[in-house]
Amino acid sequence: MAVLQIFDKLLQFPLFQGMSRDDLEIVAGHTRFGFLKLNAGKTVMKSGDNCHQLYFLINGSLKVRSFADDYGYHVEEQISAPYIIQLEAVFGYNQRYTRDFIAQTDVNFLTLDKEEVVRLTEDFLVFRLNMINHFATQTQKQMRQVWYRAPQSLEDRVVRFLTQRCLYPAGHKTFNILMTRLAEEVNDSRLNVSRILNDMQHRGLIELSRGKIEIPQLERLLYTK
Amino acid sequence: MAVLQIFDKLLQFPLFQGMSRDDLEIVAGHTRFGFLKLNAGKTVMKSGDNCHQLYFLINGSLKVRSFADDYGYHVEEQISAPYIIQLEAVFGYNQRYTRDFIAQTDVNFLTLDKEEVVRLTEDFLVFRLNMINHFATQTQKQMRQVWYRAPQSLEDRVVRFLTQRCLYPAGHKTFNILMTRLAEEVNDSRLNVSRILNDMQHRGLIELSRGKIEIPQLERLLYTK
Image (cartoon, rainbow over all chains, first blue to last red):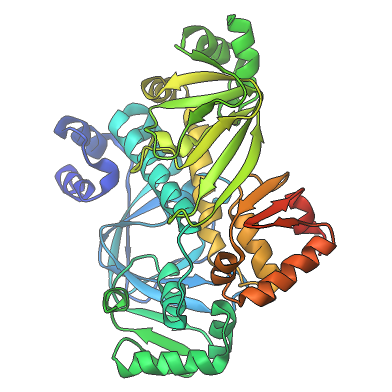
């Protein structure tokens, strides 16, 4: 890939935002990016795989599958370029992916070894601050969650359960979960949960089938109330 | 404070761990640390205050007060040196403290302006990696929380409510919360919550008074089951 093309692709990612044209040209020209092209249907990585590279999704879209800790249910959603796969997994205590990523369309990645990422944080102040600010913001947002008032109606609890488990707060989602498990998670009876879900289906917010809840547009769940 | 003393104090903090003796001497000698001494009872900062410095608690202990988003309840606990106050608040989207910190005993701080922190991340690879790894680990831990199975008994739900809202998973804690609010938060009746709390009091795990739950040792709540 030509330096100019890499340059254009990097501009799409918040990690590189605010860098001067000169700096970005140096990054594009002097950093050892890898290139990866995968056909639709191929697995990019599985939950538990070691993470020693950053994957910048520059074309196409991915199916992301996230699992409950005990694998009692899982969630599928779609993520489109530009997207960096689990930036936090290349550092810290647990340097493994915690979700499955599968090519939904043909996809292209730029890849960057961890050593190169560390070198960029050394050479470029803006890159370093972007990365630190990204992590600090993520931490701040997640630390707030616990202090929000618990939802008071069963429907609100179900909606919070669903939205808290999605990477991206909009678009199509599929929850592979039995109603008994959902009832346990929101602390209510299976019968009440079934009633609420059927009511939500009636209003076109979700579609139910055995062991599955399809959400055509998550944003409608959040804003129709 | 002499360079040698600063040196010794810095060694206690994970942010500086792994740095060579030479590097630490440079940090201790060439970084513009501030010094702050406060008497017991003085407020160090309040929730909502701007954060443009790191505070390294090097002597004494602090009372920390954390608030529900709607100020419907709050939690008090104690933190002892060595401790850095809300490292994540000096970067990211919301550069404000989100808790009150009050001197419980006479306390001493080393302080460090944000610009100096950024300079340290530039000059010292190990410091930079320590900081990035700290944030990544925090993010990883918090992202896991949502995927744990919901507790199935009311007592487990109460215990999870209490422990999730503490900074440090041991020691004495005071929850200033009405039973009706706790009942809402754990999604059960006031009567059932009252019954469980009284049972826990009977077992010596907590002490109840009006609008208040004292926990003598949080670790006992976690490990007596």
